[in-house]
Image 1 (tube, rainbow, N blue to C red):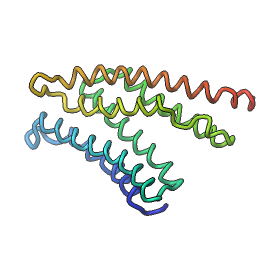
Image 2 (image 1 turned 90 degrees about the vertical axis):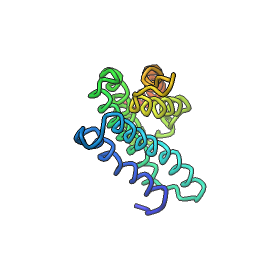
Image 3 (image 1 turned 180 degrees about the horizontal axis):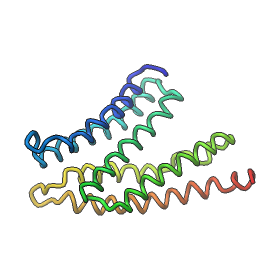
Image 4 (image 1 turned 45 degrees about the vertical axis):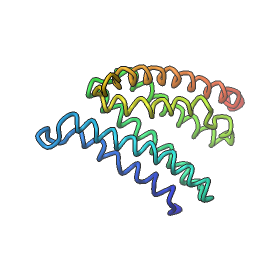
Length: 189
């Protein structure tokens, strides 16, 4: 495992997950619900920024590695799954949305692993559609975490719309990846 700034940022994202989840288990007399929402939003938003930053730094500093390429999406998926589970528990996201998003991540990860094993990993490389889906999730989740109105802006309403759109793109991108893998699957059959 190469120790460099991009990989350390990715590890930081993973280490933040228990803190992020733990915020919602603090005694209410210690931290009020609005403050829990704010702290969780800041942690998640910070993690989302490190996701962008570690990739940018890896390319800029020429510190890309196979380990970093493996760990980065794992960290993203863990953080998003943790956030969705918390949001379901808080009744801010429907369970079906969380199941669609988390289920797709598991299915596509398994598909990518299988495609890599048969030497066809490029067939299911990250697509633009997948990047748009991820961006929408990374915008929607902090809004849903924050929850409280900001003047006339309702983050819960906007976040809900965005997470539904992200779920739709999640299904669309999964269908896209399956379509890309189908020729290889036929060859293996």
